[in-house]
Length: 314
Image 1 (cartoon, rainbow, N blue to C red):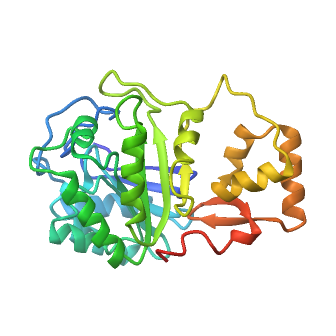
Image 2: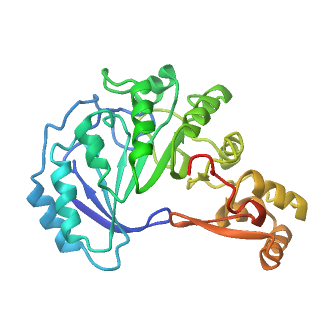
């Protein structure tokens, strides 16, 4: 039974040491179509619970100064762990400068004890794959008492109170939650959240539990451009394009593209040809484009809107 895994080099969060709060079996209140774990009936609580002392002792053996973040996760949903509040307090007592992060589907955020516990983490990543009830049930296959409207309200309230780094993740599945209507609903919800550090959008990049399909990078890029430009959208996907040829952008096109949606260097290497990349670096050199670090990622954007993005919710 492997409680601690890693450290792994996470591009989004740095050197990450993971804690699996359900290493024996999948214990989740969702049964997502895209899950890399085998299908399982959603549950409302954990039936197999690891003692806090066992987790803390295992963590202590692996913790060192080179780790950026301790990531609390599970084969399933980590907030179902009944001793999470005690655990994060114990981790805080020994972690030093290392940050704590939890990866959660946000479904239990309406529970007061979970809400208060998540406020203790340095970084919180909440998932939201759909904003409409029908699509939510179709893609996430939740435990019957869970409703997306309650989850969204809890996310809104949490985003107002939370003072750490708040990340939102949306995973898109072809033909399920990638319609224009669904994206516009997600856009509206995200605009209603406060103090978002970054919104990561992605797609399936591991063998899924059910026969569903991933989107291409081009499709994710198109979706990214449908969101309001004030939202800090990042395409977080291992999916690379085999059929897409980087295109040539003029100076004006580069500035307009980055004004609409700031891009990481990885995005630029996929979208821009070599000549366009050279022009980009010239724009950086003469000060027309600046870089801005968001979490562990660096984005390129025009200097004139460096401080303009996401003003309304800051």
